[in-house]
Length: 493
Image (cartoon, rainbow, N blue to C red):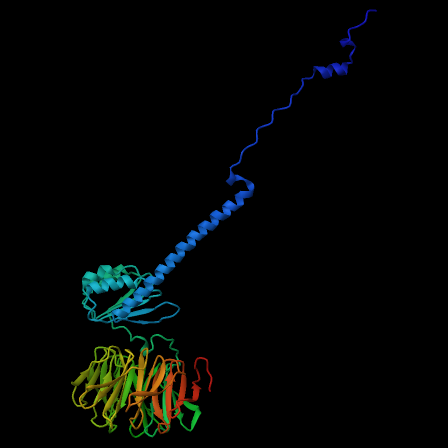
């Protein structure tokens, strides 16, 4: 048998294996070059930097906007002050109300002021009073998203102009009425409903009363300061109080537009007098006690005949603005009134005509006091000045520049040698002969009213937080600080 070829001698398996195609390895793909910002380790950092940069830009933008708004708010406040305006409701950097009354504010000036007022934070009310503006400015009233009320009282605007303003500000209540008084003399502080707004001492200095914002009247005795008798005198705000010359009757005036007469022994109400159509702020009796004089926010001075059981009244004087105070000259019977129109009116009780007008103050006149023996009149004003005047001819005598802010009240002692004045900074007692301060008491916050009592040994001061401060006039130190029942942070020292 012939030998087979070697290939044929291979097994079937080997032959099958040889018949299979041989796979050649695929060529490796070249490595992908990643750009640096796409590399995994740097991707997170890049995103973080982008976010931080974005936040930085937002922060810078917000900070710049905040700075700009603060700057414009501050500029607006400067413009308001320069225009003779007043603000109320200042809290947390916001102002709720702006009051403008200046005959020099015409169309051009008002347009400029409106540009500033749009940046006043928290502004809810604008009062425009006695401004010689016309319908030309009606189209300039726009914006003011937070504004709620706009008063345009005694301006040159026609009814059509007022209507155009109302259409431009559909969310605002536009009124031509007289706006309410600005903050009852204490616009820049919180006025609690227990704030003491009135104080009167009887003729012999042994008793005094205080009236509070909640309408209560407290009867105090110098022999017992811890237990005053409390009477509900008015529905709201007992603004004024005055003792009759005989000491047996007391008159009070309140925020309910009424006057009430009281028996000082029984503390019972004797009569209610109606005639004013706004808050009562000032009361005083004639030297013989037969007549009561009253004044208030309706800008009228009234005379009441107490000898007639019907208590008839008549208007004997008027101011252009509200009348916070009055004083009666016990020698001549003349009445002197201080007004928010920045003047003091001098009235003869027998005629409705002014004897004279005192015009030296540049702010609301909040208090007047008379010392007949020395022939001097004292006045306190929002311009921060306490002025002394001659009762003979009304000529200014001295200016006492002791209060850095507004001055609220003045009172002479029984001898006329000391004068007390209160203001935003507290109370100062002056030597009237030298016109120098004897002492300063700063324990009271926004002292609305002061009076001498207990043979001039005490100075009684009442403040906006409901505290009665009794100060020793010899040493100038606090004798006692008494909290009324609802005083803020009540406590007695």
